[in-house]
Amino acid sequence: MKILDVRETTAKLQSNMRNAVIDFSRMTVGIVAVVTDVMRDGKPVIGYGCGSNGRYAQGGILRERLIPRLLEADPDDLLDENHENFDPFRVQACMMQNEKPGGHGDRAVAAAGVDMAIWDAVAKIEGKPLWRVFSERFNEGQYKNSVPVYPGGGYYYPGREIEQLQDEMRSYQEQGYRLCKMKIGGADLDTDRRRIEAALEVVGSGENLAVDANGRFDLDTALAFGEAMEPYRLAWFEEPGDPLDFALNTQLAQHYGQSIATGENLFSVQDAKNLALYAGMRPDLDWIQLDPALAYGATEFIKALGALRPLGWAPERHVPHGGHLLGLHLAAGLELGGTESYPLVFQPYGGFTDDAIIEDGATTPPEAPGLGVEQKADLYEVLKPLGEA
Image (tube, rainbow, N blue to C red; front, side, top):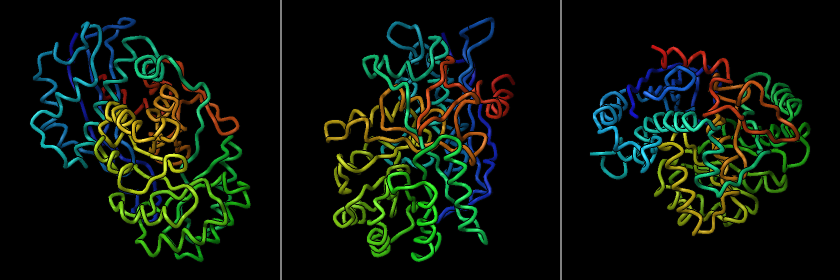
């Protein structure tokens, strides 16, 4: 059993919108295909992966460092102890040979795409959906058959801020979502307060609305927004400041009595531990939102869950960022608090399989072997040519 080839290319992220910090119209994403010599139904097993939104494609790192290490490795070194399947943890260790500790960033994004493809292949070889593999290996066979999901959205619409925002929130509710998320920080406090109140008119109580500042605020602004929003009792206040400004997060947590959510721009187990130890995060109230498709993949995410559990962070306080299939599989198989979805943006990478049904704010994970990209037609159309080249 061996990897025959690892292929990568850069694709465009089809999203013409902005948040408080960046414009996504020129954003790219890296896609990966891992071709194996394992045959199923007369065809080689091919695992597919991609990065998440917000970090651009990382083809240079893949071509020059990570992929050559895998292809040059002894094939047996990438297999599990019984040589019955690939071992994603050994694959990660191989990719990270000769890499210095720290300095994660773009390297973590590159590795995450390969890791996703490896897990897709592992589950296909076992003939199981990926969430079931996670459940059996890391959660004593327990899983969630109904996963809470929420749409990431609520972007800025110049000239139609209120009307179009409400239309967007209404469309999510019609699709079956309950909790919705909107952007703040791209306008002044008074404007954003009006936007929040407009969204609440549609979604109802504050528990059905989360807000996301995308790391935009300094301490004074974060405190001002927190004070203004606290009466709304929102589901959470996401990424209020720079993701590494743990002092800001700590001070905000001391003044803001509602939930804070952050972590999508942290890239390693140590980053996650530092967040839990030094950012004032409250395990009974706040949420950690690592994005496995940006942070070395599901392999690193699983390690982070294990590292944070002794610090008081139960799996149900983790909600993966990114709105992609991998987050859904992790949430189902490891019984996390839920996961994000992108039904309208970041296509074709956002959202779930074509037959996914959102009902009362939750969905059922897919049953097809692997990640399920073949059941998401627009995504498979992008990935398939790379695998079959």
